[in-house]
Image (cartoon, rainbow, N blue to C red; front, side, top):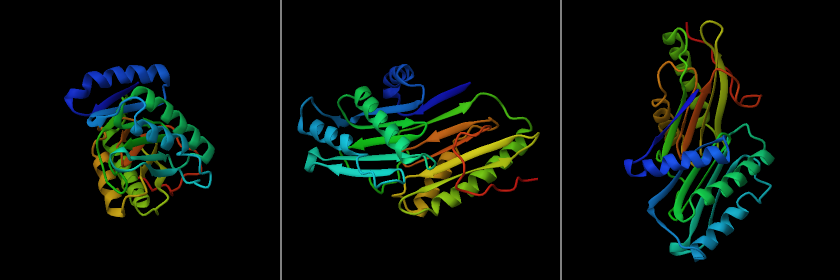
Length: 257
């Protein structure tokens, strides 16, 4: 059983509960959506809506982008729209584009007039705004999910998990401007294996990626056999089963004794 917790201001809680219900009815793979009323709204058939629809419709049209990161702008002045699409590092290009297109359709439906919105999917994240969002390390709005089952031998499990996350963070942060991602597994106690993946949007600097991921790791509940944290600029996930496609992009670290 997984529990979803949104990290947001109290004023949005009622809206978010409604959105969680709507998402579960639309697709079980969508984990969290935020429609930010504080950043402004647009009206139907306005220039902003036209620019938003144009940008999102063409976001994944460049098939030469095969590394899962899209960042484009469209429009001018107060009607400019900025969008970022990020796919998990192991997702193939066709599946990535399909995920982002589905996210586009759901996000504009769930957030029909907000100028800033974000949607987290198992395999991709899509966000847009009327302000510049490129190259900014942002931690909100965020969410985390965790498996309610506890690990056996919690102390050793947490040691192995901590070591795995540190190693993956270092590898991901050292990535280039196209991909900052790492995934691997590590053996824990009682024949348990921990599978982990971490990722930053590749427009971040190495230090910004470190900072974002370390903050996300700090939100992991202690002793749970699975969990994930999603932030606009980075995300982490670990499970006791394989959730990413092989081969992983990082060597597995040796477990701590």
